[in-house]
Amino acid sequence: MTQPTSYADHMRLWDHRLRAMVQNGDDFEDQNTRRVRLQAILDEANSVIVAQSAAAAAKQDHSQRLLDLMTEGRKLATFLNACIRAQYGDSSEKLAEFKLQPFRGRRPQVEQPPVVESAQ
Image: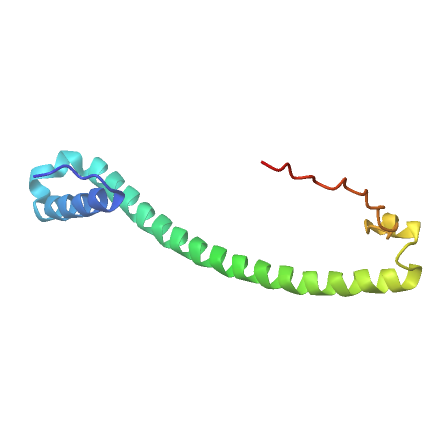
């Protein structure tokens, strides 16, 4: 028989062995404490798996809610940015207080010297 490699494999094997030990209870009376302990571990492991699945589902729900909130927040922030700019003007330095970039004009363009191609 192959050795179990996953949690599920271990748990199926434990469950099988525990059931067999219960059916042959007279042969394992001296191991009853350990059998009960393994059964408790198996039961708790099953409940942890259920909780883990519920947490994964909740995480997905929370992630979707966060995405919705971020989308709505970006729209509102864009609108409020426009309101702030309308209140103070596009070039007001007061915009820096709101972490908005004031319009300070365009940089003058530096004329590039014409590229002369050499005749070959």
